[in-house]
Image 1 (cartoon, rainbow, N blue to C red):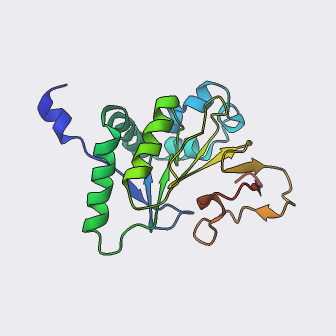
Image 2 (image 1 turned 90 degrees about the vertical axis):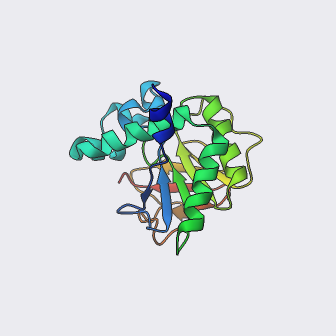
Length: 194
């Protein structure tokens, strides 16, 4: 890749989706089609094709292309530069984002990605949250500005999909009205598949 093309790469993000408010910046490390947790058989929804991120990529071809560009950016851009771009976006916005959701699709590729996201969280003044099925990675010594919810296991929270949620904390299936996953609570959040 030429130096000119490399310099033209920039952070691509979306502002919310059907369930996440527009006040949330969404950044992906990659597309669902290349999800590391799915490829390692760590996500039960990937294998049986019930992954909602994968559904979006099948329904909207531009979604996969957008997420592939995000993957290229994530893999080729240092944490400090990503944080600087996030901060610049925040400064330009009339109504700054309230949160950043990483990985609407995909997951951490490796331990370096966990460290990289933690570094970004240290460098921005906006709370970051994400979900992961990568129970094979370590999640210690992380930024206090980062909340990771494990899918079926505890990191800062545990997001557990069950047939009939009856626990104390139940997913509202709409992040516009709920913030359970956005704070380190050490709780099990039950959800019916959605």
